[in-house]
Image 1 (cartoon, helix red, strand yellow):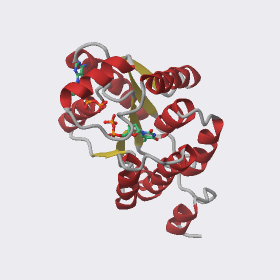
Image 2: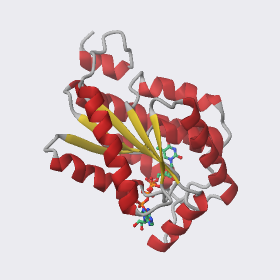
Image 3: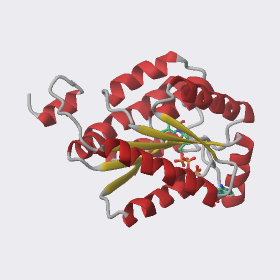
Length: 227
Ligand code: ADP
Ligand code: TYD
């Protein structure tokens, strides 16, 4: 079986060893992910390192079409399991088409949200529990981040930042407060579960303070992988 067929079927028997670095950024809506991703971009530009920036849901042409369906405010009747499977479907395509090949070429991949978002939003927020972990095990096919920056901020603070930024809400922004509290609880649980991978960052401080902390951690990650 060649590498392309291998990726398409999700069969990992012939998957090649990867050499790149996979970084994901997580946190509640409005925690500052997009802002800090720009800072991470600047960090790597200064080091003249080749980095791919991508996002979920989306990151591929197919994934972007799935994203439109998921975030459409008119899709009010969407079943929670349908939603979880659409996120996972977008992720499976993203891993196979973009992330895994880039890592195999030795590139650095920075992803705005990844599997932890599904566990937090669908597993905890929608209360679908472990089913979300199981379907996502298939979607990621063993391709997990080397490091995940979790921007930790009270969901109310995140919500206020977003409301200040834009009047328009998508389907998930409009969710109730209790949902966002459950999502945040999910993130804190994940941080406890995966201390080697997830780096919790206090995101209630200033943009500059958070940037400095992320850059410090990135230096540590680079040192670790080049040793
Ligand atoms: P996300 O991508 O996590 O939804 P953004 O980076 O888009 O969040 O930030 C949401 C809003 O909050 C933006 O208007 C941004 O300028 C602002 N913001 C980001 N980080 C901070 C921070 N640490 N303190 C105050 N405002 C912030
Ligand atoms: P987006 O506009 O990218 O939000 P943000 O700027 O906060 O990252 O919208 C993505 C929304 O989708 C966000 O509310 C989180 C949600 N989401 C899930 O519920 N599950 C997932 O697996 C992913 C990747 C995102």
